Image (cartoon, rainbow, N blue to C red; front, side, top):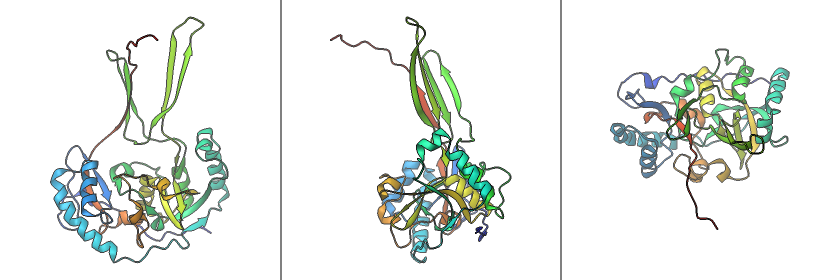
Length: 312
């Protein structure tokens, strides 16, 4: 069975400066537009989240008022039902490409055989665990060949073992340090090695910086489908008109495994509510607000510290 396109939406609310509910909002220099689901949060949680994420101070009071409107709108929506949200993936070429990616060592380590299945999942029935998406970042990912009439065209985007965005390296000779920075929030130090040239030669310390496998992951728990990884790519596909996405589906051992405690994740009362925040809400101007958040980059800085310690 091939999933059919059921909606096509394009969100451009961050490109103009008209006032009013759901209208565009100006993005000041040094900030980036984020689509945010603030309706499920109470006032204290909303204010804490906006401050934690670096929202433009001049926008906070206005956003608090709009949060009340979106919260009222959410309470009037039908209860969540994941019925018929998952479809089998049957295209032989797509299955072969997914198998090729998932057999790579880094993917195999993160997704052991037997712990997942590749399926099509309906975007509108995915529960959003995170309240925010950087829409400007989402718009620059994905190849030109994405075609909502051919859902298989999303496979290379949803099953990519590498991230397409580059990172930048700078050396600080006086501090004997190296800094690696990039817009992608997930890259990290994956391994560290120490070798010696010959028996009495200098020590060589090396490390690897990379992002984990770039796979769209849906976690199933208590009969519900939660989007765990791939928010910006799913947003990009949703804006392109896709109704279903190919992804890895796994069973989650607990809700805490899906949404760790903290202000950047929805918590259990919200995620298990009769009508939780759904990914499709990000495209609804009545539910998702475009919020200016301070632009940030992830930086990994590595520096050897030199010091003396007392001998035993």
